[in-house]
Length: 324
Image 1 (cartoon, rainbow, N blue to C red):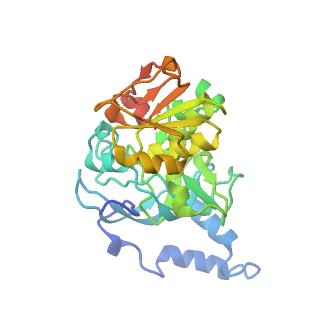
Image 2: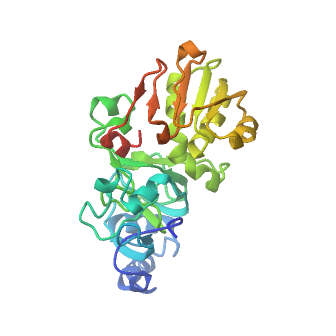
Image 3: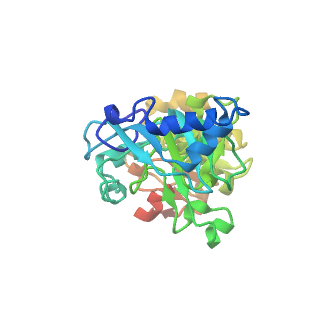
């Protein structure tokens, strides 16, 4: 069942170091040698975990579409900008399924394409920070935090410098190209800038999907619409329902566009003020049709993005890799 936690390494959990292993004893001995520190000091745990590898237990697929199995691997020490998160929740995204099946244009981005033997999915991660590198200041051990689709960028190109790191030519993805994702008990992110504080008031299970699907629709709505705009949302799956909710909260007049009459009640309950029925395959509405913007959330429509001018823009594989 490719839905919950996962991690990489050797064949299964039975090969993980047992309690009282030499690595664990080293930490305990260090605590005993410093009586001024509590035996369970978070500071000690933080320093030790940062400087040493971490044995991570996960679920991984050992081949396309194969059942996910327990898998253990050694994560390297954290770099100065790195952050370690103990995973409490991880959502299942359609991109995880495509990576697991090695289809839908994701074949070249799987762990197998990178020469590894196991694909560890998961990129809607919520958990507790357990270690940070020396250069990290925005989160600390004990904080709640989240990790989404991207987990690294160059921070020096024109895109990064203007805050659009997802467009960086060096962007890396949390569970692509051999990176170990969040279907695991821990996840280590080399670039802590992609680990985000999560307020305690946010329900973890409800917040996790916002780190991928949520930001996918939030960004174009936030950047390309304003209060009072008439916005059409094409498709009422996971992305579409979040898009309707966000657009309504942003003060837009929302019309839900779907080929299924069964979605009408749901769309109206989410705040859509009207509903248009799309053609059997797809329909594009432009400003001449009385809407300021149309957001397409379904690839069946033949669109991946629709600018306010009504001109569809298809994604390349590299842009899809970046979560655009």
